[in-house]
Amino acid sequence: LIDLLIAHAAELVTCRTGPRGAIGPGLAQLEVIADGAVAIDRGRIVEVGPTRQLARRHHARRVLQVRGRLVSPGLVDPHSHLIFAGTRHEEWEDRVLGRAIPPGRLTGIRYTVARTRRASAAVLRAQALADLDTMLAHGTTTVEVKSGYGLDRDTELRLLRVAASLRHPVCTVLTYLGAHVVPTEYLDRRDAYVDLVIDTMPEARRHAEYCDLCCDPNCFTTDECRRMAKAALALGYRLRVHADQNGPVGAAELAAELGASSADHLDHVSPAGMRAMARRGTVGVLVPGVTHHLMEMTPRPDGRRLLPAQSPFWPRLVRRMIAAGIRLALAADYNPGSSPTQSMQAVMQLAARLYRLGYAETWHMSTINAAWALDRGEDRGSLEAGKRADVVVWTVPEHGMVINRFGVNLVDIVMKDGRVVVERGVPV
Ligand SMILES: [Zn+2]
Image (tube, rainbow, N blue to C red; front, side, top):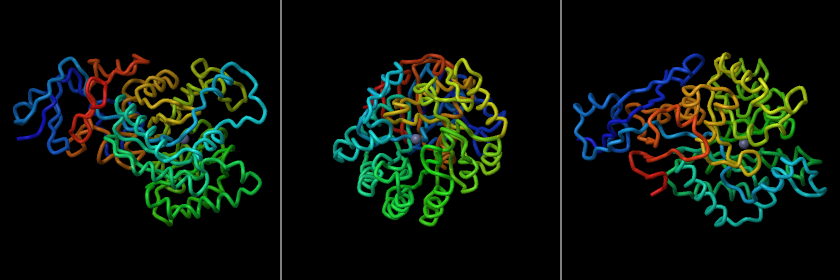
């Protein structure tokens, strides 16, 4: 006798792959079971297969009939800046319209930092919980959460304490990102800020599993990042890297050298960086929300600004990464400046369009490969025996429709560890 049988899914996409995730040609090979079923007991998946087989083999206390609907793994979002105050929608309008930013106005990350430092833990917590509700309603069951809008010891630790205190069905994985940018007050003494990031690491480690480093022309140099990474590794952190977003600085190479779990952004990754990541198994996390939201505001390597959808730049780069054998994942990179969306569904739609990815590729990158980006590929990210029963039932019958349709929520039911946490697209 098992707890639950999900039966008669029009399509069941398992996102099951080889032992390390979907790589190279495997990225395009998606397992789809027609009239599929999932057997679940005590929060874990017991078996996945055709309903005909599973209904014979298992007696369930409850049967959930999902005729005419798609069933998939819960979406995994391996990069978010969940905890912040200060939205930047006004700055975005100025940039979209090409208006001059008034002199002296704080913009970008530094604006959000100023607002976040003034926000109380209660305000930050309430907003984060509301955002987690939105993520869950759109099918995300695991999300990585970074600090990084404090950039001083007290605020960074406060953000991590808020993140650690969130009680919510979405599973959160915590990351210390003191090394986001050099705060204004340290611009003429960068080394002192790097020291501060390192000094905060032991206490931040009480909450955070990962340490993230922004290695980019606008943030920290490879030497600064290497110094911080060594300190983090000595404290038992695993590493993530914001890599080569605004220019090629060798961040992907560094991420691979340090054994980072992921290198994210990668807009200007070098061929050597790609080879190093593939060799070391560093997951490449792409953030199409940023590509979309900043669009022609994102300079190409030749300095021109073109819509990515009209330019072969993005699709060609992503094809090169796939051909190099990098495990690729997608993330919403939820943040108030460059990607203000909580929805991995939206991100899947943007990825397919802007990077010209197939449906199968997009699904693997949002589930099993995203789980590997968080070192959790053995535990979640696909529907197979032994894994957590993190399951989404969609309102549409076929997996391609989730990506082809855009701008509306297609989630019907979400299950976390075998428990129904969303019904009719609304958290219960
Ligand atoms: Zn980020």
